Length: 116
Image 1 (cartoon, rainbow, N blue to C red):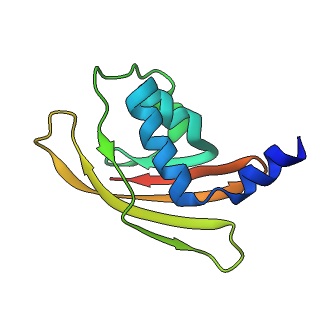
Image 2 (cartoon, rainbow, N blue to C red; image 1 turned 135 degrees about the horizontal axis):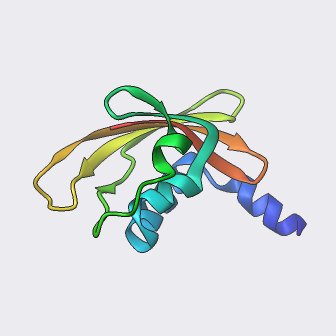
């Protein structure tokens, strides 16, 4: 058990972002968003909404958007991180950049802000 906790603590916010994006492809976009969100997470759709309320009724689209971090900044205490990078729509025609704010919690990282 201790080994699992130590391994989870060693995972970076970039690792969490990559796992989040991979889960979106494997298990579904909104399923992944719900899996990695913090209880207080906020999204912009384009207005600010509480993520859990917004995500609750959503069904996964046939194919998820793709994204990956290209930049990451971590707070001095290591508890907060900001990842930024490109995203591509499922069709490949839409493109842009995302920003995700992550908070380190007991078992790992959870996103608290998603914009993109």
